[in-house]
Length: 127
Image 1: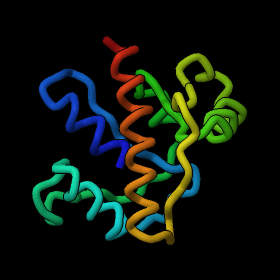
Image 2: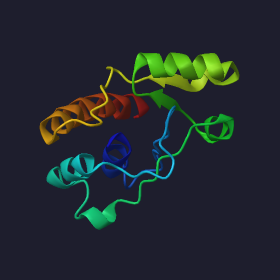
Image 3: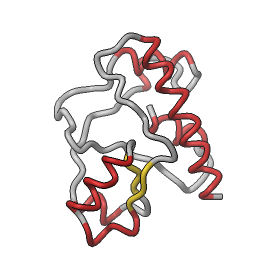
Image 4: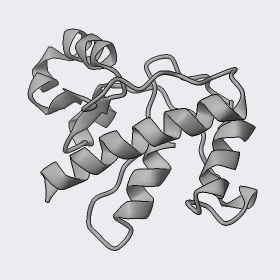
């Protein structure tokens, strides 16, 4: 949801976000509740707009990225520990974002509100 929100906010800019996971479920897809929240918030126009495939983070991805944001401070710490040569480009989101996986739509909607708040702060910092 963070990737889609960020890219939607900056669609006319040179910035591009891509979501990568520490423990990505390869071959999976975005949950239906996450898709519904994006639809409800006009980030996507229908479910066919989703082309998200979970991808595991690795050194090449980090090397090619300008900045990396862990969805929690713990995620950022794990990345810094595993990739210390890239520690200067790894940051935590301005607030820890809980993982709504397996929860109901209401939890996903609350999570999205936290994502919006954190991503908006990052966008202000990038400006």
